[in-house]
Image 1 (tube, rainbow, N blue to C red):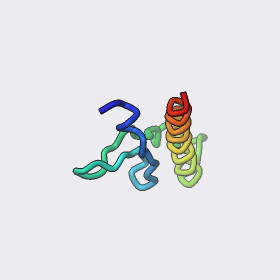
Image 2 (cartoon, rainbow, N blue to C red; image 1 turned 135 degrees about the vertical axis):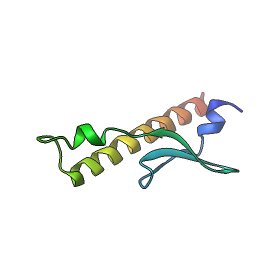
Image 3 (cartoon, one colour; image 1 turned 180 degrees about the vertical axis):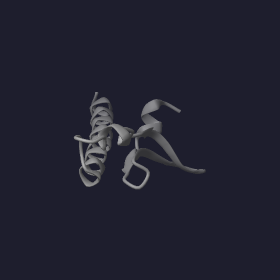
Image 4 (cartoon, rainbow, N blue to C red; image 1 turned 45 degrees about the vertical axis):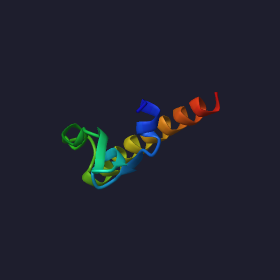
Amino acid sequence: MTVQEWLKDITYDENLIAGVVEMNHGTQIIFDVRGWGWLTKPGKMDNETAIKFQDEVGKFIVTAIQEKLAREAKS
């Protein structure tokens, strides 16, 4: 299996706050979006804003991976 094959169906799971791939044995977490403690320190973000921010970061990473795979598939 290649990296490209492994990541071809990557999605972002808002419940896990993670990029995931569904495998035969279930959900495989590829990356975890971390930073809750830092984001919600006094003077930083409220909880709702921090949740949205973490989701935006996770979706950005998944989109970047998908775009790279698409470019590689064309070449």
